[in-house]
Every structure is written in structure tokens, then in C-alpha cells.
Image (tube, rainbow, N blue to C red; front, side, top):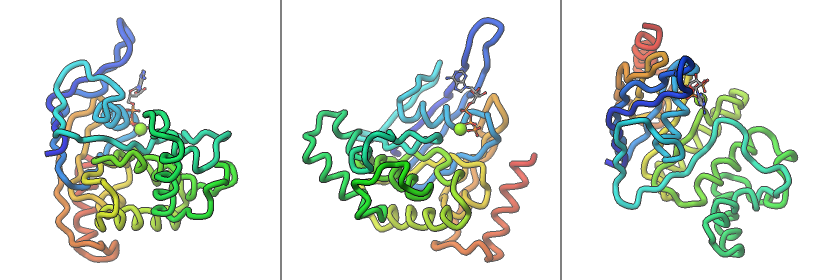
Length: 242
Ligand SMILES: Nc1ncnc2c1ncn2[C@@H]1O[C@H](COP(=O)(O)OP(=O)(O)OP(=O)(O)O)[C@@H](O)[C@H]1O
Ligand SMILES: [Mg+2]
């Protein structure tokens, strides 16, 4: 197991304004692709941040295997507009004290992997939304993480760009050219979860509990038009709309 969460509880605020967000979440993540699916505001981003260790749970435990590290693709745009694409991607390494030359070399390697060779010296505003999201993925990969955590990485993209990037990320992961062993992706798109994930964790409304875990056994690459695919989609919708 890469990460095990047990009975994670989290509230925000205090006094009369206390808001319970996570209500005892337990989850095991192995070398697999896990989709976290749940209604807006139920606590998906909070759960991902707790997993990455950037937010603290009120109670419960998180156990990670030795040497597990995280790369994060955030829900909201976080590229720095005054830095070039290359320097944006190199930033997490530089922040960790890696030599600037080496950091840029690594950044360049991961930009190539996401198909952005030749755009190193561009600024984020000079890129399309899809290209910017590739930069975000490269910046998550540059720290050479064991786990890639992605928070609705495709929700801001047009359908064709999103579909292309989904396939590329699956390819990168399945081909083993990166260090990533496990992926956790937040989504509220049922079809996207069935297309990509080995395991779909369906969360309830806030305060979130695990409603159901659906194992997706369909062979890859998956065909959205196949009847078996549609059957899984229908089954997941049953839980989501319950
Ligand atoms: N730092 C914070 N301070 C106070 N409340 C917060 C904070 N972060 C999140 N919340 C609250 O916790 C709840 C869950 O937020 P979260 O961002 O985890 O939801 P989500 O499932 O990711 O939603 P969405 O699908 O809209 O992205 C929301 O009601 C939000 O208002
Ligand atoms: Mg969110």
C-alpha cells in the first residue's frame, strides 16, 4: 500500500460557524489509479490536500509507505505569470534547494514528456489552456513523485483537449517513463472516472463519507462506446444520484 487513510475527520471554522467536511474517511491506495468522485463542496480537494500533507486532519491517521512522495496538480491556476514555462516547472526543485542548472535540465525533460518541447521560454499567458495544464502536470512530475495527485485536472479544458490529455496522462503512467506509481484524481465527471480509474471512490455530500468503492475491471484502452463501459457508468450514476 502506498497510502492508508483511517477515520479522517476534518472541520473548518469554529464556534457557531463550525463546518464538518470529512466525516471519517478510510481509504487505501496501492499502485493504481484512484478517482475521487463526489458532489461539489463535499470535501474532495480537502481530502487530497490532507493526503499530500499540506493540510492537517483533526483526527485520524495517514500512513505512507517509506519514501512515498507527492506531486500535485491543483484545481485553480497556480502558474506564476512572470516566470517562463521552464522556470515555473523548475520552481519546486529550486525551492527544495536543487542547483538551478540541474533543476532546469529536469524541467526541460518533463516539459518534453508532456509534449511541450520548444515552449520553454514562453510565458504562461502565451499558452492555450490545454498547454498550461500540461505545464502544471510537468511541474507535478518534476519532483519525481511516487504519487500524482490531480484535482479536477481536465475540468477547465474543452472536450477534445481534455480527452487528448487524459489519454496522454494514462500513457505516461502505464508506460512507466515517469516515477509515478499511483494516481489519485478528483473529479465530478462519472465518465472520466470510468475511463481512467482502477477504483472509483464515491463520496457522499458534505460531511463526506465513503459511499461506495467501485472497482473498474475494464481492459485498457477503454472504449466509451462499449456496452461494458456504459454498464459501469450507469452503475456509478446510480450511486451518485442516490
Ligand atoms: N481553508 C478553508 N477554510 C474554511 N472552509 C474551507 C476551507 N477549505 C474548504 N472549506 C470548506 O470545506 C468544504 C469542502 O471544500 P472542498 O474544496 O474540499 O470541496 P470540493 O469537494 O473540492 O468542492 P469542488 O467540487 O467545488 O471543488 C466547502 O464547504 C468549503 O467551503
Ligand atoms: Mg475541489
